[in-house]
Image 1 (cartoon, helix red, strand yellow):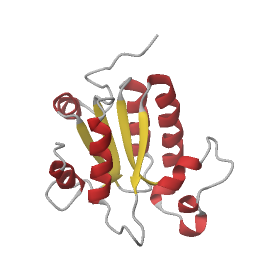
Image 2 (cartoon, rainbow, N blue to C red):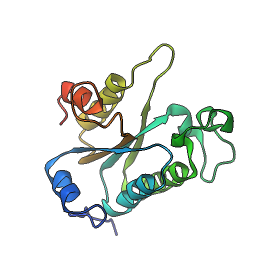
Image 3 (cartoon, rainbow, N blue to C red):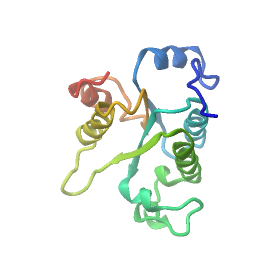
Image 4 (cartoon, rainbow, N blue to C red):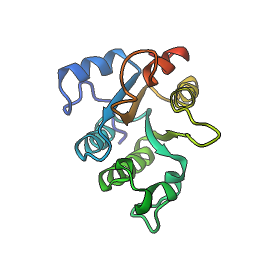
Length: 166
C-alpha cells in the first residue's frame, strides 16, 4: 500500500508543519557534522510519503556510494573529511535512497562547486527549480549548512526566489 502524505508531521512541531503546508520548498540548515538534523531529514522521508524531492548539499560523487559503502567517494575520504561526510549523513543518504525507491521520491545532490563553478547558490537553485518544473514533486526538502540557509538575497533562498521558487 502506498503511503499517503502526512500533514502535519510529528517530528518538528507546529511552526514547521505550518511552513510545510504553505510552501513547496523548505530549506533546513544545520551545522555540518551534527547527527540530529540528518536524522530528522531521514525521519521526514519516512513520514512525508510520495513525490518529495530531497536536495542535499553533497557533491555528485556521493551518488556512486553504495549502502553500506564498499568504498568512499573522494569528497568523503578521511584526508578531506568534512561534516557533510559524517556517519549521520551517510545513514541519512541511505535512508533517503531507500525511501525514494519505496515512495517514488528523488534525491538530488546540489553541491556542484568546483574550480570552474565556484558559486553554490545559483547552480543549486537552478537544479532545484528545474526539478520542480517537472511537476513530479509536491514538496522539496533542502538540507544545507546554516550559513547557506539564511534568508535574504545572498543565499540559497534568495537564489531560489530568482528562479520563481519561494
